[in-house]
Image (cartoon, rainbow, N blue to C red; front, side, top):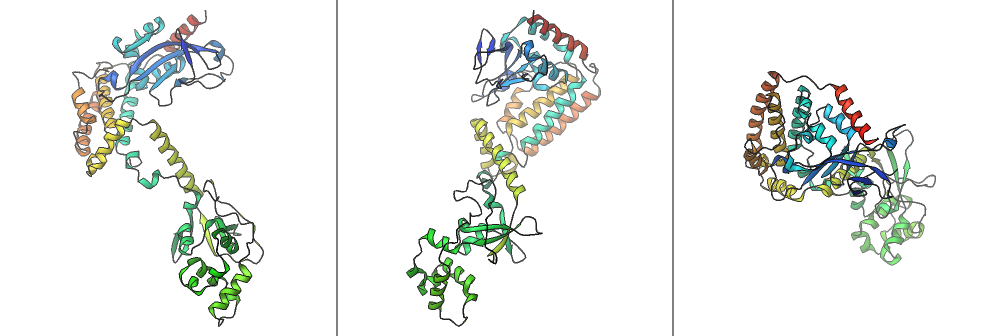
Length: 436
């Protein structure tokens, strides 16, 4: 069975059908989540949705190969959990899932009677196990807010797709030099290079050059090559002469030397495939066969681990760029453009951090899960989102709130944890009701 996404399913009378028309379950619950639920939304805020669905028994029995714990859209703005997975996450006090039980009626889009019964037990799920996920998630938001790898801090060069050629280096003095830079200084083209492994030297490669192929591809004529002025101005001609001049009498006039080199070495060798493909779409370096006795123009290394890391980071960047909220991105860029390092943070992540820490404190104090932040801390949270404070000031406020949260947790008298057998009985009851 193909994997379900919110883009490839059809919902009719709350029943879910895949693109082939097969029945895949039923929606039990749909609600508004995110900033519209907390009442911290702004004009440009997306309307996120969450929900619960139940799969037929046929997908649960046996090995459960087609069981799908969640169905979500490409942008992650909407996600619905299968009832079994939902209750697992609630039992672990997952903040995003637990809040679904406390959604006010005006934010509920659809609710099956079995969910209404489940939500009537919501306070039973509020235990001391909530402290770690709420506080831990808040900490992760702090790290996201000003992390070194946050996309708003990426250097522009990290946003450019690189090739394996960018990770090839040769020796220069007591250090190294990018291979492409080394070739450019000599008027050479990577397309005419041939790489060969160097015995007993891992990741070290001999670089050979097809001078005749370069002449053909560049359209260099005999008249041009043998002209003394070309030797004085053309980097390639000087490089070729420097490579082959030891084959001839050192006192030979330059005109004669140019002619002899052309006659002997202007014919392409054939078979050199380049360091990477001509169009640069290679995912690794290439190797060639070279004649015995040929001498390399240099040796180089290839850092394949660095290239793999770049590819992973670039894919993450493209995914982020595809799914980012444009308004949120522009807000973060304003902080970067200010030139003040204290304003360079993700303000929405910081807002979530304060909200979660405050909610953890309220849970510890026995106030329950308070989602709507109106008349609690809504104005402050919106000020954080609108970048009213510098990061250093927010850090001080965070430390104060964390101290208050930790003290409330230490003195909390709410129950330790939810009875897992009670949750299991709830799940069995719901499944039996839908299979009769």
